[in-house]
Image (cartoon, rainbow over all chains, first blue to last red; front, side, top):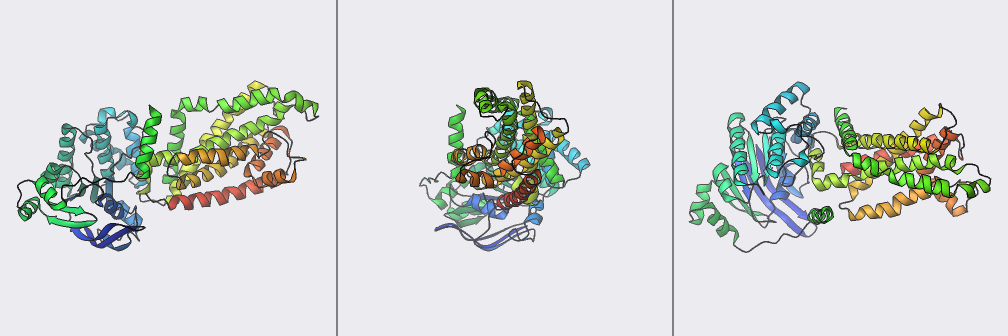
Length: 261
Length: 248
């Protein structure tokens, strides 16, 4: 479903992604793990047409995202690391706008929105503006939205960041259910090893832009002679703390925060 | 088509849901209208130019449309910040449609804001020469709005943060307004000022609006129309091109 060969992305002098290759099977839940700044988000951006690769090839369901952007875009849904809802619109309006952008016929749009809002327990609050939603509710709505146009692949970039254990549990239960009932392929990144171990069939660990290990959770633990995925992860990537340099968007966020006080 | 429509609708919903902003953005036009209108009125009158309020009301309306439309374009920075931009950038539709939908939404909101200020002007004592001028005025407002919401979108596509916003305000928006003939007649200006006002699209918008509302024009209305329409075409293309090149 996803096929990546020798993928490279350079930003000026910096090599963010160094010749990585992997593939994800249809219906698989695939976890992409790595410390901050390892190249996870850069890879997702290339897979989802937001960035052009420097070199290498990507095929999403057989289609090249660099040359056939819109065909690829129709095939996946995505939940970004940062929120991407329109806070001035209600949950219903956010879903409807999404449905129109993805060319979902009106009838289907309404039916699916209702089903998904109920599934993610947001039906009661569907007429509320999403800026009033809690972090967990926003995330749930984003996943519902990512799924509205029945994509073949769902990309989840750290979807549980900042959520409480209840919300995380609920979220993974629903994702797993969609994966099983609709044979949805899921490509996820997370910093919570227990989540990856729980839902993912295979895991790739990326560090400094290169894949350092790839296999089932059990294989990774065997490879590193550890008993927990977290230990395997630390063994593979070292325990030094990574400081990601704040990008312009992080600076902006701080700026906005300081103004809102 | 549906992409353009849904983003236009979003722009309108944003406008109607920010009532505080609607009221707040009446402040500046009111200030110009009342303080300058009545403050400079006697001087204007003594200079033999007639009623200053009559003269500047179209300018203040044009200013309102300019500010609202350029800010609606620049609101792209907020969508970038709060993430909604990404949702539209990964959608399987041409980016140019998204840009046009956004720009039309912003332009419509700017026209509504302009009409609101027109009503305020009427209350303050402004009297248009006849009713036929009103639909014409709407056309001029629409042209101004499209020109500047496209320009705002083009600039917003290039700005990554709010710091640039002040730059745009001080070095583009305010000069556009002050160098447009909104506040003073364009006749008998020093050469430098004459050239600058001559390349400012807003000069033609103000002039068109003034000819529609009070029957006074510096350029010919047909010139105004041609120049503004040309600017509109160029800026829509420029805006769509800039928008389609956004990388996150």
